[in-house]
Length: 341
Image (cartoon, rainbow, N blue to C red; front, side, top):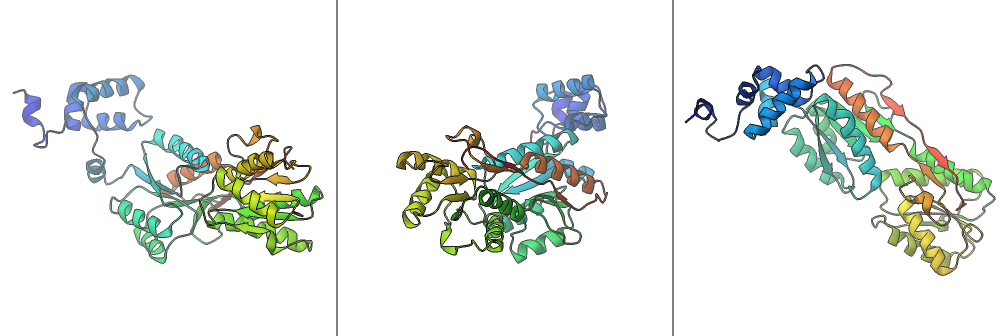
């Protein structure tokens, strides 16, 4: 039996000390190299990684956190992974955190505050370095868990001016008002709002829609079609068919998400409804493919990649003990006017 084998843990796991010995460096240097810290030269990183690969070394995050009293794990909780909106955000978060040696743990809440609460209970037991959370819709117990944890936390996609709360996003309500104002400026008189999922951000867009039309005396609550079902292209087509049957005088529709609007455009083709000649269609989020629809979809481009990168950068500063200002960061939105309106 070799000396290395005699020193190996009873569990059979290869230790960091073995990797360091194989690479001819100290355990501290080996640890820094495997975490990808920039202070370690590229050739040294390659040597340590080669030793780790040769020995079959697998880092133990729990042991690392216990030894250093510093976790490298950062949970990010998002509503869905099937929505490209959150995939873009997650990629930006990971790209920002990984170079600093942090691991992103993804939790999916399915728009349910109770599921978020359970995820928080699970992740907080591991004392992560910080948290990234979508929005502010959570249970009272979830709020208490966050407050008692004392962990750095940044909220994404929504804004608040509450003291001590860090957030990166944009005004969903102003964005909803902006796209509705565009439809009014184009001369449309009977403007509907069609929404699904009905999460807090969708309902904030609805507030912007109502405010725009109420200020002009054009608001008709009968032109709101709200479905609790998950948002999808198929549902968008179904809701458009329902809308035009119930309200044939409707001349424009603001859909709360692009997948609904994309499905509506396809249904309009099947029904022989000219867009925008007979009916204007607008969406939200500028998802992939919206600019390739027939006709190309007018929508609101939301800065989800920038939000993910900025929120991760703010969290890194909080972890370092800094107090970045401003606490609330509005990254705005962009109206993408295309041929569907």
